[in-house]
Length: 140
Image (cartoon, rainbow, N blue to C red; front, side, top):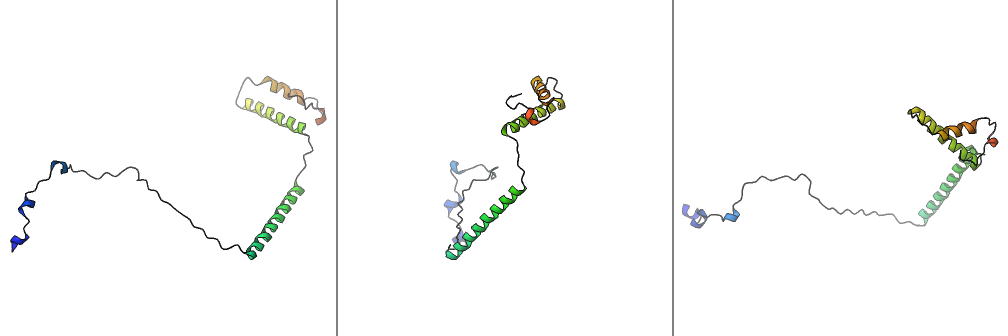
């Protein structure tokens, strides 16, 4: 009875060829994950834009335009008008830049301040009673 369950003698004395014998290795876990490519598709379905929805949409657009006009009118009502000319605005900007440079030079202890800035600042401020006395054409 037991003879029927024995393997054949060829399998008992088998040897593996040299190319099949391998060194025992542990599985190495990669440091970076394997790149995978996924394709995602979002299918968006919109309900049909029929005539009743079109009427609602056009009325909403009209109300939005009216609201924008109202906001613009309110902003215009509360705004102030600058009566200065472009030359006066440019002059004020140059003066503010010169003052800022002088302040920066004093704050950080820069000994050699730009002499032209200091000279032009004192020259243009001394003895002026109104804005019309200032020569806006000069750079200094």
